[in-house]
Amino acid sequence: MPKLLLITASSAEIRTVRRSRFLNFQQITMPYLAARVPSHWRVIHIDEEAEEVNRNLEADVVGITFHTPSAYHAYDLAAHFRSRGACVAMGGPHVTLLPEEASQHADVVFIGEAEGLWEEFLMGFEAGEYRRTYRQTGVPSLKDVPMACKALFHRNDHTSGVLFATRGCPNRCDFCAIAVLYPNGLRKRPVAEVAAEYASFQGKVIIFWDDNIAGDRGYAKDLFRAITPYGKWWSSQASIHVGQDDELLEAAARSGCKQLFLGLESISQRSMAEVHKGFNRVEEYARTIERIHAHGIAVQAGIVFGFDHDTPEIFKDTLDFLEQTGVQNATFNILTPYPGTPLFRRLEAEGRILTKDWRKYNSRTEIVYQPKRLSRSELLAGFSYANERFYSLLSVAKRLSRSPVQLWWTLPLNLAYCASLKAARLHQGTGLLTVGIAARGR
Ligand code: SF4
Image 1 (tube, protein in one colour):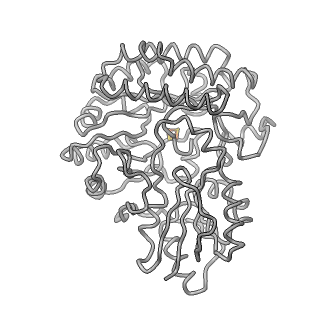
Image 2 (cartoon, protein in one colour):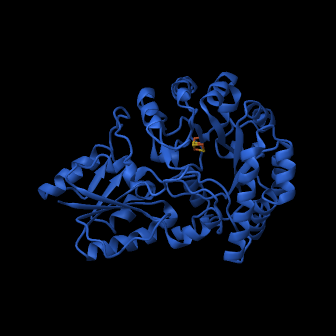
């Protein structure tokens, strides 16, 4: 029986940076890939967010997926398992963004989405004939996607319900790796198949691991209607467009949507224009948040600091705005130009990339490019200020007192974030902290 070890790699540094996160969701790439492995293989999955890799494990094939800041750690794991005779296959965001680099550390690399190619590789491996590079040149169908292998999930608590309905995004924001990883825009699984997987989870709470759940409003409405009968609660990421359609919001609320991660990014319209996200109309933010709240849905704002139009005032102005609008949660990031994105190319052409040490591309503790209207220390201090102020008890009181969304779960969630921020401060001895839900690939 051939043995397959799947690793969702996460370096020690990244785990430390994320230590203050109250919620770390189950990663699903490997459980979905595992569902495509022939049944005679023995499959183990290690998600390093949840447990250490046992380096003594024996495997014929080791598959590793990782994001940019964990690249060197993933290469170290690869070297270790190759030295033990395993065939190491790598894929995922960083490999797709920088395949030449990754291929120096692996026996096999997957560029782009692995569906179809993954099965081809496993068959080839058993036959003793496989390629060094599997590059996705087609557009894999999202019909008949096998349900993720729940036996390989590490979290069996309330967050264990994770799945995806769509892949990619119709937009093309310069700083976002999603558009590079999924160049074919937004693709959708059949609604009935998504609803069946949604219904298959025992837990009440479901996370749609989509990049933009409302990227196609018609599809989203159909999906929300299809999952309504199951009476679960769910959350996902969405672009600002979600708040411009009351029918969509009503369908979302009725189906159990409790919170949306909204990519607001900045309260500076010039910053939004600068990164080709001008469809985010800053003057409409407050009204959009109000409309979402009116449907009983909480807002988690995704905020990025460090755009070229950001000045030292941006931090206080942003926090004032978030408190005035009663936003329930927020994730703050330092602008990070991931390799392969238009933003990276522009900053590199301008001579503003300061390092290509991928460990520093964590969006939380390092500035990897030269900002324009802020010094690097101002940016770091402003980022720290934003986290500290947003999750201070005073801010929680201000925001939630203005929030029409029920307190019975938004208040405990905020208090948990406050406690987790405090714990991280004690652990790290630094104010450079992170609080919030991961925004995949951003
Ligand atoms: S930032 Fe959001 S809206 Fe823009 S491309 Fe990425 S996922 Fe789409």
